[in-house]
Length: 85
Image 1 (tube, rainbow, N blue to C red):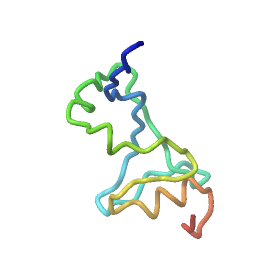
Image 2: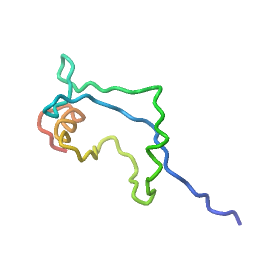
Image 3: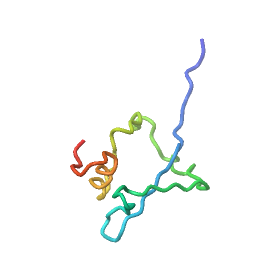
């Protein structure tokens, strides 16, 4: 009988966006939020204290941000002005 494998969490990708002093995301000329990456970044520390029992399966259709800019980010993801999911 084989033993069940143990898993740990690691960061797969990190996406950044810029905000002004009022918390509004920086937009391009078409009104879409500009997203940035840091290809040389080391994100290994991000998962050091993750409890894998608290993780949820990733679904790009459902944003899960809980910051003050959540509404603006949801609007960008949905590409509309309603902010409704």
